[in-house]
Image 1 (tube, rainbow, N blue to C red):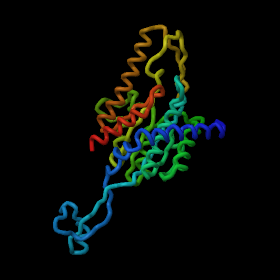
Image 2 (image 1 turned 90 degrees about the vertical axis):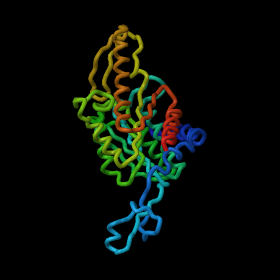
Image 3 (image 1 turned 180 degrees about the vertical axis):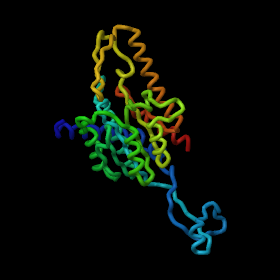
Image 4 (image 1 turned 30 degrees about the vertical axis):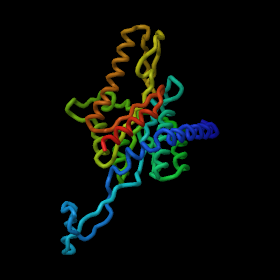
Length: 307
């Protein structure tokens, strides 16, 4: 993509998402995420009325006087956008590719973070970690995030997806608690696709996600396209797996073929919902043929209601 074309798209996304943030859910974001954690502030002498559960026994033993730990509500958040830009994202049957929808979703989340004086960071991954931008503040920083997501193309030989690897990488590099949005189509074994593990054994995806969710607030944002849910009646159609290059032919004139395709797509969606629900992970479903704003508002209100 030419630099001029890329910057034009960045500018368009800035206008569209800026309006959504300002007019639609500027306050919803803060209500959903602000104050969801406590951070350590100081150790001070115990005073009558302090909760004995906050006593710092190490300091008390060292000084000979009772001391308590004091915590304050977190006001500044760190938001990290972990974006799957493998080759399966280079597909779209409506007005945009899944990767373009991912870029706009990342933009609106990053701008919402900036409006609330929070930091935003980015990790782009395929079957490896391709790009990382440390969390920072400011509109220019957000525009860089949008530009890098829009301009990214999978490198030759790295068109696949390794979601467990990406999640494990974040668990290692994120030292401070963060809100992590995992943006992906989740077309990987153990997530939406069947895995080799038995029913009673967690998949590599589930294990990595649980580990990340122990220290961070994780939200899964799944992106799909209507042609991944249903096929048109178009006769013999040759399809190609964008990540593996495997090709096969389907007879879409057969109602049995179309029904089986739809049934498998529904089962795939339900597997992902079930796994995320079982782990207590919030889930936003985004599609290339529907506005994503209302899905985000529903997420924000659901989280605010739980508080």
